[in-house]
Amino acid sequence: MKAVCVYCGSSNGAKPLYAEAARGFGRALVEAGLALVYGGGKVGLMGTIADAVMESGGRAIGVIPELLVNKEVGHNGLTELHVVPDMHQRKKMMADLSDAFVAMPGGAGTLEELFEVYTWAQLGYHQKPVALLNIDGYYDPLIAMLEHTVQEGFMRQTYFDILQVDSDPVGLIARLRGYQPPPKDKWADNRDAV
Ligand code: AMP
Image 1 (cartoon, rainbow, N blue to C red):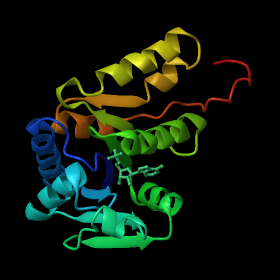
Image 2 (image 1 turned 90 degrees about the vertical axis):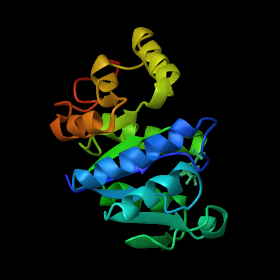
Image 3 (image 1 turned 135 degrees about the vertical axis):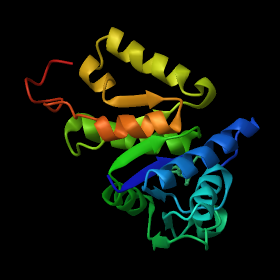
Image 4 (image 1 turned 180 degrees about the vertical axis):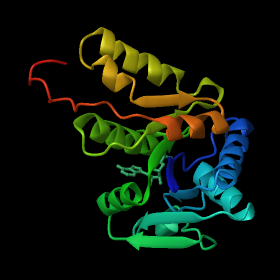
């Protein structure tokens, strides 16, 4: 594993502990010898984690669409900043450059990015780990919703289990390293089974 893609808020969130956690995860990535791949902005937790990686002597690679260079303030102090034509190319490039995906606290954009790579894993498009860094229980309601999808027969337990969850950055990196993808994709057995 060389690079970890981190999805996180373009805002800082309501509590200072979210930014502290972003700094902590940035430092943990550097200590683990891992590069950060992220959305390339300077704002919110995105900017905070990138600053932490750069200040700790690590590698931060940003991928930002042209439209957002000014809005999310493209970070000019990164190891690499790729400016791409649109969101689809942003997400594809971030995915291609990364060996694992982690969502930290964030809003709709973060959730969209998380669910894209999560569902790609379920369909067998990639075998890379997908994880939540669950700071201060931020993702507990989402985890409960996903458990509900399993209980109600809309998702198999196997695919729920793809999602790695930890509140500790070092523990999460260990989970990413030890991850074993499910042996079969969603449609391997038959088309009706959930
Ligand atoms: P947010 O969590 O809403 O603060 O957004 C975090 C990041 O997700 C920002 O860099 C947004 O540009 C990005 N984002 C928002 N919507 C999308 C989308 N539909 N596809 C990909 N990235 C998005």
